[in-house]
Image 1 (cartoon, rainbow, N blue to C red):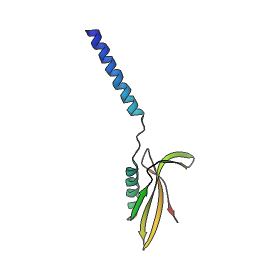
Image 2 (cartoon, rainbow, N blue to C red; image 1 turned 180 degrees about the vertical axis):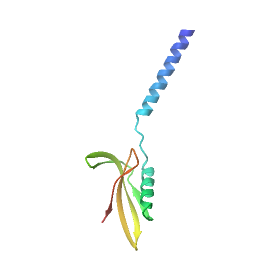
Image 3 (tube, one colour; image 1 turned 45 degrees about the vertical axis):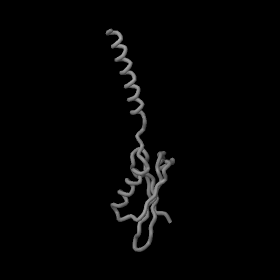
Image 4 (cartoon, rainbow, N blue to C red; image 1 turned 135 degrees about the horizontal axis):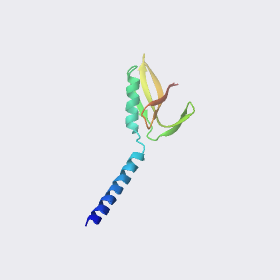
Length: 104
């Protein structure tokens, strides 16, 4: 009976360890909605925004010799009666803004 319990406990331990390893190895990516929310909060620090959008599929972005997986999005601001549009990239792993620029 003790041998059977030992084998059962070892099997359960192995299964739990295997499942935990898979969970820890998977990279935690933020959702596009969370990426847009992060970008909106960052842009709101310098003034109100009137519109926003984000692509749901990440794309490769190179900045300073490093390659990132990032969501591309945009923000619209109304400044002095004129709409100004800004495009940005948000890193899928950290949620940080990689780059932003005003579009024409």
